[in-house]
Image (tube, rainbow, N blue to C red):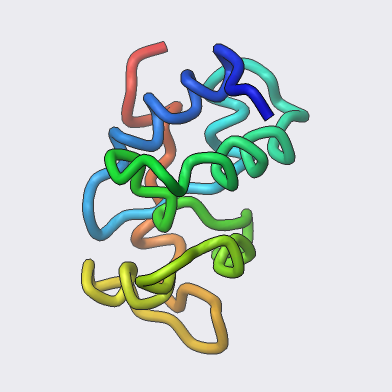
Length: 109
């Protein structure tokens, strides 16, 4: 799949997520003005794994579940998050509301 400008816009947002914080596919879609495109954000994240500048491990679903973990090769998503201080149980972030980074609140539109 060829990367569209939308994919590049997604990657630009994901690169801004601070270490130790996470966001959701839907939050990125809302920030980019395409509310119902969380699934397309997921496709962008799946296509991003060859680019080490994109911290794809910091993008989870709206409930803090590591739904994209099966796309990681080498270092696992949960290991990368644990290294940043994120606590998980059964593939779900424990303190999701505390570590959630909402680009709408954090970035200028």
